[in-house]
Image (cartoon, rainbow, N blue to C red; front, side, top):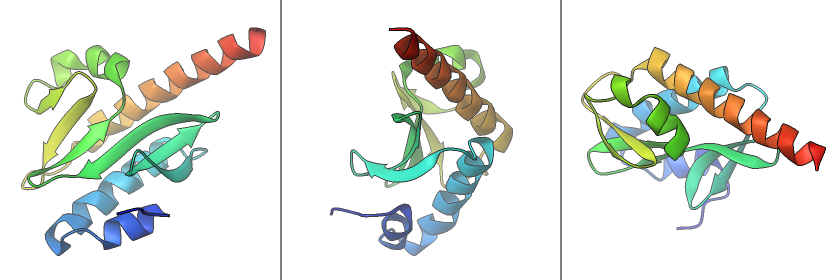
Length: 123
């Protein structure tokens, strides 16, 4: 489906997943108050400095968080309890979201985003 907002995306999800998705949204929103909410790659996305900062998405058994490979690598030692991939981490629906960890990952993404924006501005 093509979504036009994060509200529409969450509304389309299974009832048992909505609370976790809204919690994820609020954690990211609080950590990145200047970021814009959009849909990108068919996922809820926060954009900052005209670049995607972080995505999240509903999956069958988990919420996927997609901060990018650099952030995943930076937090590898702290995320060993979770499944994931090169650019994602999977938070099971049946466990509380690790708010502090997610907040720190978002802030690391902001730092990386701002560094890229500064490099582009110098060119």
